[in-house]
Length: 164
Image (cartoon, rainbow, N blue to C red; front, side, top):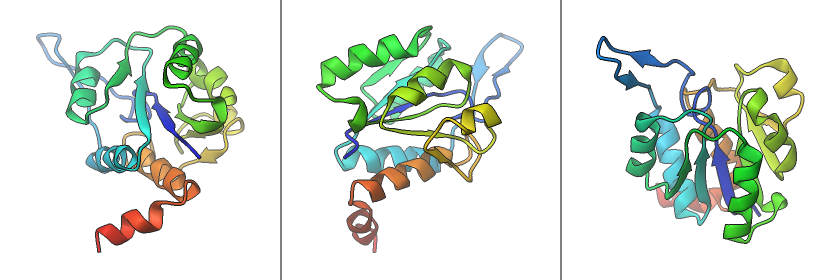
């Protein structure tokens, strides 16, 4: 049973692009399908956490908007952050899923119980995870992975039926 889902941001929740305007303000594009997936995960009792290597006010805003209580940006060692989080939440590696897409995610991808990457990640990342999405980063890949988790947890049919 997956109790916590950890997500990277750039390349996973976004397509990896970062846009700056002439005033130096950062913008990113997030997919609403991923947002609904996160809400479905939360509704089913899964703690959704964001751990990102980049410090970003835009990411923090999106996390607050989605009701993600635990979000960590500007994190250099994601594994160290995760180990502290695991202790705080009282969860094990086997109860945790993580979705990342690059070298700074690799160690954590190998540690958790259920790991995933996006279809447009690198082959050396894809070869190390349990699940590779059909969708690209920032284009519904998180939603796709969440649905896999909800199937794995045995709750997807109830969630789907609640919308019928």
